[in-house]
Length: 424
Image 1 (cartoon, helix red, strand yellow):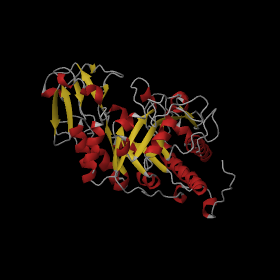
Image 2 (tube, helix red, strand yellow):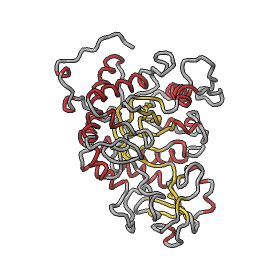
Image 3 (tube, helix red, strand yellow):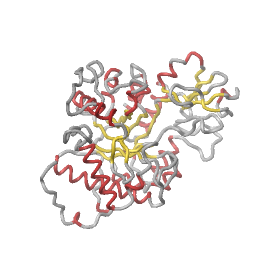
Image 4 (spheres, helix red, strand yellow):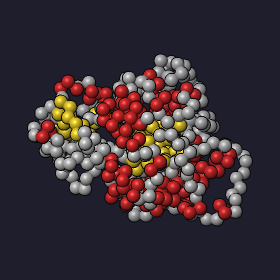
């Protein structure tokens, strides 16, 4: 930790307000390709950081979000899985640079592999993602007061950017991350059961971003490096309006990623699209969900086009017990389709292996596809739809595309190649 003392200019010495927070600039002007690498993908899926090199993903990404870090009850940053994050040893065959981890080295686990990935691809920016569906319980506590916001941001910078991990040498993980991605699901809206939710979350989220910008400014003064501040944002306009001061939020973010999937799933009684670009003509849902509905709402609310990044899925949502009419679309079902890791959810590469059992259907005008075998229905974001989504982003001059999640792709990177070909 630097002994250099930070001295605020006179203006910044006043009480922190959003209006005084430094505004973010879109310092990367090329179209962004952002991918989430999940902490747990190295377990059952056996998808390691090195696989991002092997399947051609890494050179096609501009940003990688490592998911997830959690918050404790006070709002301070903690590791959700220390073994996966920084303790697990990797063999030479498993590692990015072909070198085996040895006992006693300062850093192991996924973070060391990400460090090796950055060495191999120095233009790639890697951010730590905080929260997610299962890790957003205490975000409201973190954002509640000026003191809690300052403590949260300081703990995040200390742990993830300065790399001071518990039970590790000081600075063991320094330099792995280039910024922070906030995945608070969702300010002022219910999400996972048990999450703390307050009406004032909307204004507090903006204030939390302002605090990040203030402390990032100090860190930049010390290190000379710039730091990204991004956020994962909901597709539902009702959640947007309840939880986000859109214009102010995007003024503080480097960019924001908009959820472009989970519009529908087996929690719905009828089969439907989960990631259509536009709302299908016969969609019975009210209000309608689609990527265009979501993106247009952010743009109308003050988000600059260059900072709006559209999410795309590398997985499918599925139903079974589906009535055999209309090729299975918009039909009643008895429940979620059986799947490998979670009922109603299947990685693209695993579903592709079963493709011979299904017929592929497409709605070219709306921009979505699905599989149906007479009783089981899966949404289907294949290479054709990924390229279509990439073209949509490019044609609307949006800020890029975001992927959840990279472990769903094939061994030859079929989806990432199609997406980036559409973006270019």
